[in-house]
Amino acid sequence: MTDIEDIRARKLEEMKSRMASQQEEADSQAKMEQQLSALLNNILTPEAKARLSNVKLVNYEKYLQVAQGIIMMARQGKLPGKINEDQLKALLAQVTPPKKEFNITRKGSK
Image (cartoon, rainbow, N blue to C red; front, top):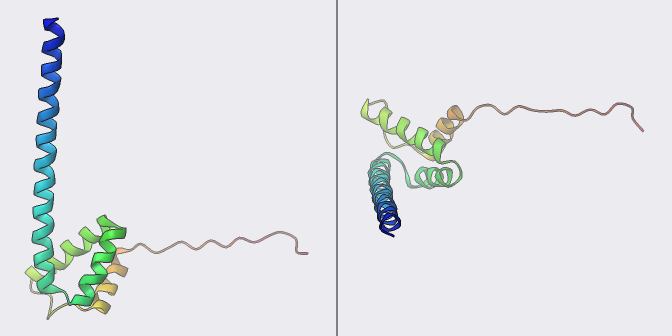
């Protein structure tokens, strides 16, 4: 019976350590999000911030890519002022790959 108890104790410790590491990861992710949001509030107009928030809900990777690009441009001094919604749309268009268009044609018409 002690072998079973030892195994249970080890598994319990493993689960506790996994939970702790997941919690730390979630905390660091939340802290990063908070810092990113604070920086973007200084760079974006409210309309642009709202649009970027919508992008975040739909496509998180694209949000991160655009947000990091905006912050990098701001740090390099490439931004003359706050980014408005139209400028953000242009940045999003640069990040978005072009869509492929498919045309289906039927042989023989009725």
